[in-house]
Length: 328
Image (cartoon, rainbow, N blue to C red; front, side, top):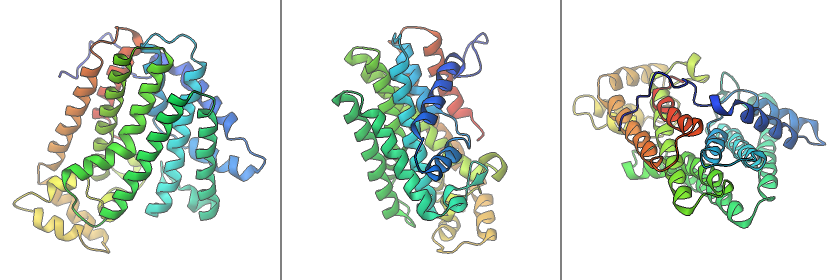
């Protein structure tokens, strides 16, 4: 599948939904207001720290590409998905003991462990308060996405320090990243009153975009810099999480054994990390992983085949290109 686009197309995937994304931000700000100012402050700190807004973007583009007219409901559910994502980031940083996020201190480092933990819970509750306004079908899809996040995190904890089989890795990233994006894409089409085939197609788009996104994220953890990532690189390696590029690298006949030896160290020095980066660069691990991400992006584009052409479908196509080509 060709991932190139005509020169006349906008180079920004979110160009057609800038106003709607601004409305999502306003919806989030309204939703995180609390009688306890510290809750609002911590939530605002996390949400204002940046992020690609891909999750609400996919929901909005799915809604509009399928003929949705009144964006008010789509904006609410898009905001809910971004709040759920922000909640998971707060909790992930606590679980992983990550001190930096998007170039700033993690919430728990800035405000304290208990305060951050409760703020993550608060975001989840507020997101479900939004979801509760919708029918059982939508509530069920949101709940399934959150269940997938929790279950995949448990599997990831259990596999820390191990080189899990490829299918386990793919299952983890499907649960923690791809299924929530899939749910948002399906709900967007559902709210636009698309038929079952279109809803399924948008779900396939979201699932495959999510898989591609996470694989590229795992590549950037190795090849990126602290400046571009907003956090130290090789975090997954240091924490004993075997991502796709690490799985490929440890299979290399020349240097895989040494990479595996370094990976299995419980405490890794800076020299260990730098040596691992150098050794991985001598393998085809990054190339193989990027190829896999492009395969998922191509599947996402294939899912759009029966969606009518529009600037919003164009945005979905451009997102596929952006996901696989991004540098941070």
